[in-house]
Image (tube, rainbow over all chains, first blue to last red; front, side, top):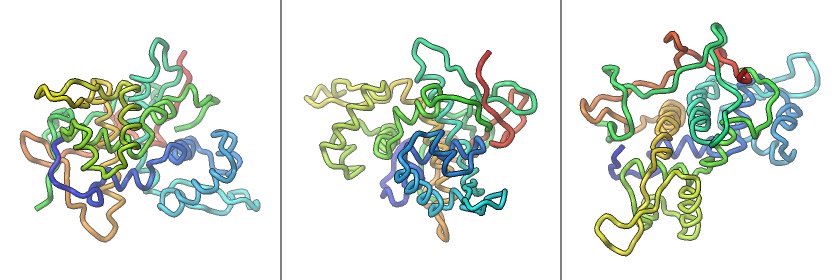
Length: 147
Length: 147
């Protein structure tokens, strides 16, 4: 990528990070993909202080990433489910996962893997493709201002 | 994705976020992809306090994402360049960029776009593919412990 002159206000990376650029928030989204829905489930999974989890969940609802809905079983507790916007974060989580697998397990094997539910086979690495299908690395791209 | 019982210590997403899960750190990496190399260049681009930038750059070097190298022109200043591990963060930044473009510009157009340097055409959306090439959404995947 090569930079043209841009304010961060115009940068979609900066705007995305502004909405989800928080370690805990992305782990909450990860857990929501795993099917967790309740405050207590997130708390148990993440080991977060209740007040921090409360603030992060509220932020994700305000960002339109989670919806707070009545409990499926008619109970008194709210449940948190991914919106379409939240589900669109899937490639972000997969990209982090694959980078972590490749680089953050020095001298050991990553014990877990993301697989295709139907076939049980590991997924392919995410690859950026040009319009004509060529694989692109960072140096093969640039950003430009739209006409 | 469906969750099996796992500690976050085993989760590559958690480990990745531990290394780069900081708004500023990822914007520094973004700027390094744009070709920025010097402390002053990052500071001007990001408008960060010097002490915060110093800490973030040191963390990225300690994580093996940036290398601190002598200045290309023989000057007294260090320069910061992406390592291979750092360049492998490209899909993470692209995924954030594409999500931001799709969801964080309500009622306005995102003015900048990522294009193929050779052809000048916008890149394709990142898509997760199964081993046999089928496109996979989050609900089409699960994680499992390696045998």
